[in-house]
Length: 268
Length: 222
Image (cartoon, rainbow over all chains, first blue to last red):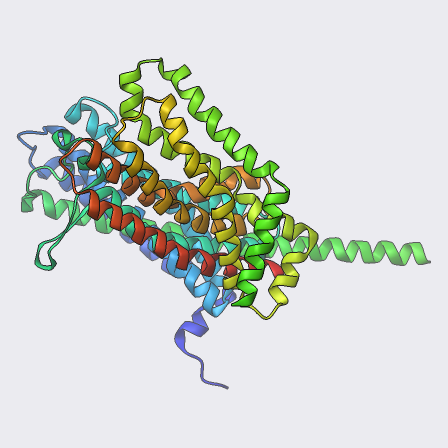
């Protein structure tokens, strides 16, 4: 038997369906345990912020959601790259499955940010630089979903969506820098953020006070829990997508067989 | 390189002889800008303050409307396949077509802008810089737009979809176009560096646009 690398062996859809079930259940179980512990820490152990009061607890969902929104796009872009270069269908399945999950976490980050903003800023939405760039990320996710939905030929839709995802990941840093600004003191780079260009007086900062370890540790545990949740959902969505494609090809085969029989009957 | 000039001349000729499309884009731009005071009220001070933003966004939308024209008719009558099998690299052909779109649509829209500035009580100091930012920034509109046009060639509801795909890509260009103007009109601000970033974004999109659009076209020819 020819030597095959471990990634090649695992990339076989049938084998993937076999092992990913146990992997998914393991990650999902771990995620439940970590999230329960993280939420316990967040609600009962972490101190209440003297400025923000109990609203600081929104951060334990908001910050992991914002991280995962970006990680989701990275997964989509990497999978798309893998799909275009290696032409492996599983990479396309991974890209397709990650888009709605990433979009959901982006929406979660926007909604929790907005709920946090109401008591802090007095309004549900301000054109804060970071909120704005997360909103733009949400639009990019919507574009990926809309493009895939608008093209009837599935294999063409996969390729074009992959091109769009790669264009998006090339342009996203420029969007992020132009909206949020960039400051690298040791290189002498200082680009102001978008809203300071307009109104220097009303700069609002989401980073708030410095994070103390009593809040940072529960935050990191929650981030780990949500990341595991993302991975478990991603694996589940990939499995669903593989099964959906199998059902589709079986249906097409069944229709073809039926048409064939019909021909035979007609010929007799 | 001859192929580049041939395709450019052909597309410009087609655009000139079928003048309707450019006229429609100009008319759309005019009516969008004329609708805004009707919606916002005729307060000249307010209009003057927000005029650069209105003009930039109106131009983006009008150019967006005409992006479909870059590949659509060539795709339908099969001449795109002829161009793809030709000796010139597809990226060069796409670049020529995007450049033709810039000359035939984006540039006329940019040149119409000062006239529309009159309607919006735009600050006199801002005319020159507004026109400069539009001329420097509109190549990004045509070249990044060619990506959206190529991706949605076979899509249903292509016209609406292209707006959803392409508008986020225009955000850096819009931000630095407006930043340059507001640095001049309401100092202090560093107009020169914002303008140079705008030029850099345009040049970058001249590279990125044809590569991505050509990739998208190749997948659709298979």
